[in-house]
Length: 102
Picture 1: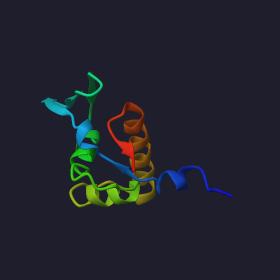
Picture 2: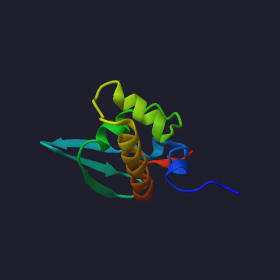
Picture 3: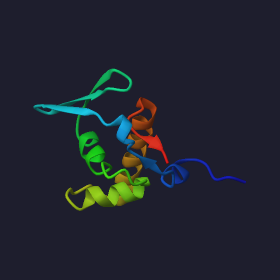
């Protein structure tokens, strides 16, 4: 039987496809991301730009991997809470087409 739910979401691997790289325009607390392949512009706030920056190498990452990359520079609070938030953000970014499953 295949495991599903939040624990499985944390094991899913994502990557930033170079073809999906966005043009970035910071505006105070907002960041505009223009996604040339889809023609869409997304307005995002932290931690999305920071997450995408740490995926720019194109290597597949799990939510745990990305959490660890972010934790080097930021106080993310309790690991379980932060990990759930990172996993949820990755799912949302995948739905927008800004990252893809690896």
